[in-house]
Each structure stands twice: as structure tokens, then as C-alpha cells.
Length: 100
Image (cartoon, rainbow, N blue to C red):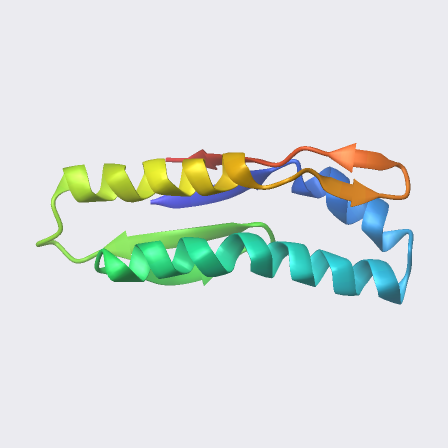
């Protein structure tokens, strides 16, 4: 499974302009997204193989059926929909997730 946070390029650019404070906020925002997603993935038998900025590549044990993987993807979507937009000095940026 591949999970990509849509909208984070805009967030990254805006927060980077704020210097150290912005970098810290960016880390907090990414952690706020990834931490609960990782818990869901691991609970269902998945492993994070790699992170790439605002994305992660996940593999599931072969015994995990496709319906479980789809359920995890749906739960990650729900978590993302519940998140507030990221507030920056230049306005709010809504966050979405793309999962394949």
C-alpha cells in the first residue's frame, strides 16, 4: 500500500518560509498524521517499509486478506477527514490522503 498526504507540498513551502518555527510545525503536523495511521497499519499486520517526505510505503503479511487492507485504507481516510486544515501565516491548507 502506498499512502501520500495531498496538500503537504503547499504546507511545507509555507511553513519553510517561517524558519525554525515552521520546520518544527511541519514535523508536528507530519507526526500528527503518521502516528495514528501507523498504529492502524501495524495493528492489522502491516509494516512500514519506507517514508518519503509526506508518503509511506507499506507491506502487509501475505496472510492478511485484501478486505483488511481496504479497511485500514478506509480508516486512514476517515482519520484524515477529521483533521483540521493546517493553519499557516498565508491561510489554512486542507489535507487529504491518497492511497493505492
